[in-house]
Image (tube, rainbow, N blue to C red; front, side, top):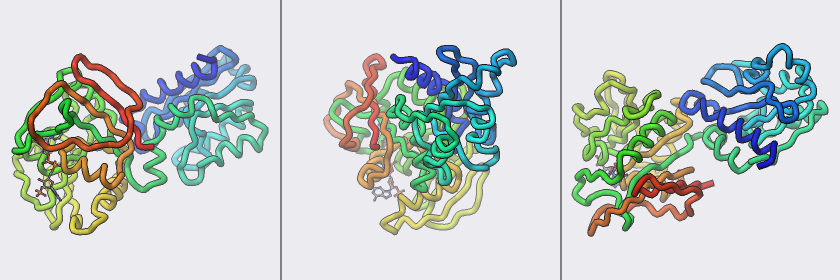
Length: 345
Ligand SMILES: NC(=O)c1ccc[n+]([C@@H]2O[C@H](COP(=O)([O-])OP(=O)(O)OC[C@H]3O[C@@H](n4cnc5c(N)ncnc54)[C@H](OP(=O)(O)O)[C@@H]3O)[C@@H](O)[C@H]2O)c1
């Protein structure tokens, strides 16, 4: 791996430390290096905080500050060029006299989207964009979907039998994956803004959708309860995490529950529901089933990533898992569970 790739990889590793807390802002990591020597590094810790570039510059020891003017700033995402809650990072780069900036992906936020890089170039900064750009795109895609498509990044997560069945036909619960996979799923829960399920899954599995098996924050819970007939005794309604409920008819509020009136008779009910979630600052949404809801996302091509556990179980009958039509980009083995990751971009 070249020096540039190694330092960009370090940016990605730093960026991921903000998983679950950066959103709806992007996870961003930055490294300031003078040749091979890292003199500063930082990442975007949480929404509203200083940007990764600021953290990296602030971390430079006084004795190394004289090296900044000969250093290269590696950033996983294009530096911002707009006044938000903090001043533009392009200002900082120019004020510090950093002569060389390498990014892995563009920031599609309106007002940035290439203009950050252009401004730096116009002021004589050498800008490079093609270092680990495929991985950079994956890291920042949730933010870019959120700001450019008016909906959250949609991650489908499900388990299937070896013969592609997702659930028994009678609406009962059949656990498919092992304890390692289950723990991994709880880690993912700490990294997403919200988890969405359908009424069938809420009824059959009574899931809590919290991150109990991994340290970190629990996501918001979202359930589609079209007819408003889910029992209030479900764990989803226990008030332990915020829950958003979408119903055809108007409902009053409950403890830690927000009801949304939504017209499910319209053909575009699903994109409209996603727009509503986007309005709630949900930039990264995980869909955890069931069969009907997952199929709706696939049929309407409203998904960005899928994480699929395929187990050795072989049922004679059941509800079919979605057919993604996208080859696996990554594969892992968790004992006997086969995990594949698919991207739809
Ligand atoms: N293997 C996995 O990874 C996994 C993950 C999650 C769940 N599951 C399993 O999946 C099963 C539940 O799957 P599911 O497909 O029944 O549940 P679902 O997708 O969670 O929800 C289905 C519900 O959506 C509502 N709905 C609205 N419009 C519909 C339409 N046009 N067609 C069908 N349903 C519509 C219906 O409820 P209303 O009539 O009340 O609106 C229906 O019961 C359970 O056995 C659960 O254990 C498996």
